[in-house]
Image (tube, rainbow, N blue to C red):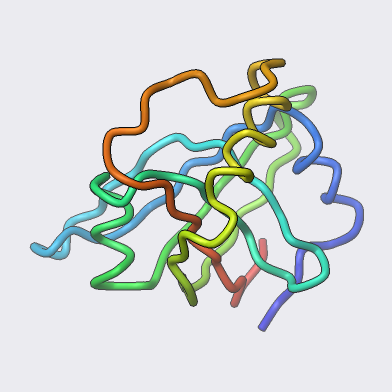
Length: 129
């Protein structure tokens, strides 16, 4: 297992967008932009989504993922991670999306309607580039 270098932790405090790649049931790549977070204590990338979304369905079936992000302040500074979704959980997912909405939207709560159920993809980084 790899860890996120300390000098890249600031990417998870900014409005950094990541791209998460999962595999469809046909084995084709599916890439989507997402808000990204990091649990430094557990060394897990966190992606908050809804259970019905394609990336969540793909990760539940095939947990291997790729994540790429670019520093919004310096497009030549970037981080790429290959890892595995170890857990897809609803625990704390609503509070987590509200926390992300504060960072990304300057809103107290996530304002968009929830169509199914919020889930957190907890991604173990296996390779960090």
